[in-house]
Length: 123
Image (cartoon, rainbow, N blue to C red; front, side, top):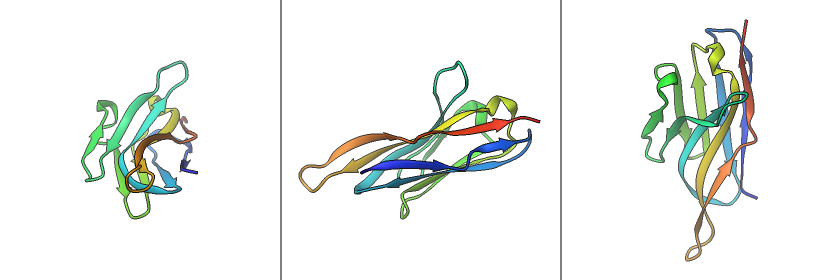
């Protein structure tokens, strides 16, 4: 079964740091784009950061300069280093990946979501 498993959420004081991890497992041929979304209470899920297989990255304006997204292609794992956390960063964070599965001649893309991990920034 192909899936994403997240870890690393928790409670942190304003100005603190956390690192989220997202590991893809199963019979995956390759991973195209990976990203982190977040959903605050009562709000829509929004893209926080994304990274392509070649390393190009995207950041929402609200996290630029504070968050860093990286990936380890050999381990099919993505990370989100979050520094200078603010109360408004409080949300459930979801990882996303578009993966290529299947055998030669019958490959297809799947869009996967992690289970979500809660990040709470509060004093």
